[in-house]
Image (cartoon, rainbow, N blue to C red; front, side, top):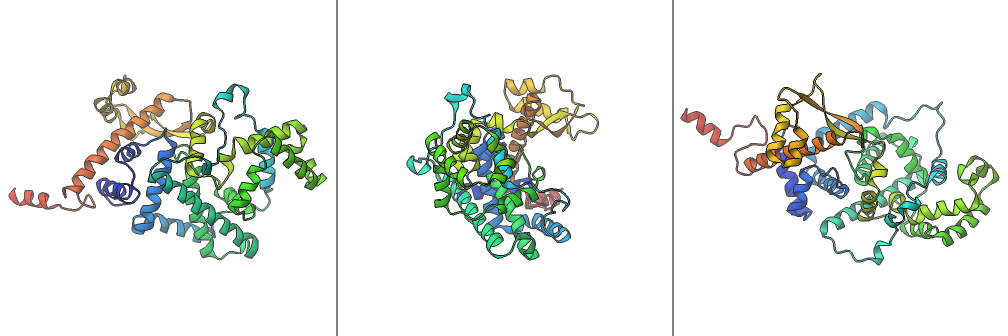
Amino acid sequence: RDWTIGASVALDHFVARSLLSISESTWDALLEGGNDDLELKSIGRDIVLTRRSLFPETAMAELQEEEEAAEEEGGLDDTDDDEEEESPDKSIDELLAKLGGFGDENDDENAFVWKDPSSTTDNNNTTNTTSNSTVAQLSDELQEWRRKHHEELTFDEWSQDDKMVFDRWLKDYIATLQGNTAATSIDQIDLVETRNALLAAPPMTRDESDSFWNSIRDDTEAELFLQSLDKETSAATKTSSPFWNLDYRTQVERLALLGGSLRPLLDETVDAKTRLAFMERHSNKLLEGLELEHLVRDNAGGIISGADLKQISKSGGSSANNLTQGVADGDRFSIQKLPYGTNDKALALFQEWNRLKAGRARYEEHLFSKGKLGLRYSDVMEDDDKTKKDE
C-alpha cells in the first residue's frame, strides 16, 4: 500500500504482458478503467489473482485485515437464528416463476441463444484461455468445498482456519465471476447468503451439470424434464412453490428459457467468454437498479476540484469539453454511487477522470522504469541526491 503508483503499475504491467500475454492495447484499455467492457474486468481480475499468487507480499496488508476480521467474528457473520432462512430451492423456484424479462417478444432478434463452446471455433488469444481456466479451476474447487460440507463436516463444524480459507476463496470466486466490479462491489454482496446458497447445492461433476442443462435446452426437452420432475415432487413442495402455481405451458416455457437463454448466467461451469458475452448483450437489464460510481458535484466536501477536472478537456476531445462545460475552478466533486442510468453525464465524467488518472499512472511508470522514481515516494533517487549536492 506504500508503493508509488509507478511501481504498482509497473508490476501489474509486467504480469499482464510477460506472464499472461495480454496485448498492449488491451492493457491500455484496462488501465483506463474499461467500465463499459465486462471482459476487461475479468482480465483485470486475472492480473490481480496472478500477481497475488506470485507476489503475495503485495497483498499482505489486505490478507492480514481479512484474517483479523475473521478471527474476531468466527468467519463471516451468520444471520440471526431467529430469522427464517430462505431455501435456495425456493429462490430458484421464484426465479423461474418470474422469468420473462429476457424473453420479450420484441427481443427475439437480440435473444442470446446458448451454444456449446466445444462445438464452436475459438480464435481468441491466450487471454481468453487464461480466463476460462481460472473459472474452470474455481468451479472444480467449489465442488470440493461442497463435498467437504455435505460428506464430511458442515461449514459450522469446520475449523477456524478452514473457515478463513473458504471466506477468502469466496471473495476471489465472486470477483472472478462478476461482470463489472463498478456495478457491484464486494461490500454490497451478502457474503453469508452467497456462502449458504453455494454450499447448499450438492457437489456436481461437469458431466452431471451438462446432463441437467441439456435436459431443458428447448421446449421438447423441457417438457420431458417437467413431466419427470412432476412425478418426483411432493404435494407439499408444490403447494409452497410459486413455480408450481404457474400453468403447465408457462412452466415449460420458463424451463426452456432457463436452459436455452439463461444458462450462461446460472451455470457454474460455463466458460468466461460465454458468460461475458451474455452479460454484454443484456447489460442494460442486468445493471438496472445497481449502483455505479459517478463523479458528482459536491461543494460540501468533494475531494476533486473543478481545476483538476478541467485537465480532462485538455487531454480529450470535444466530448470531454462538453463534460466539463460550466465547471469552475473552485467547484468540488466527489465519487458517489448512484443507480445506473440516473445520471449519464456524471458516469461519463467518472470514466473520463479514470482515463486522466491512467495517463498519470503511465507517466509515473515511465519515471519508475527510468530509475527516476522509487518504490516509495519517500525514497531518495540518485539524480535527486546529486541535485542536492550540486546545490
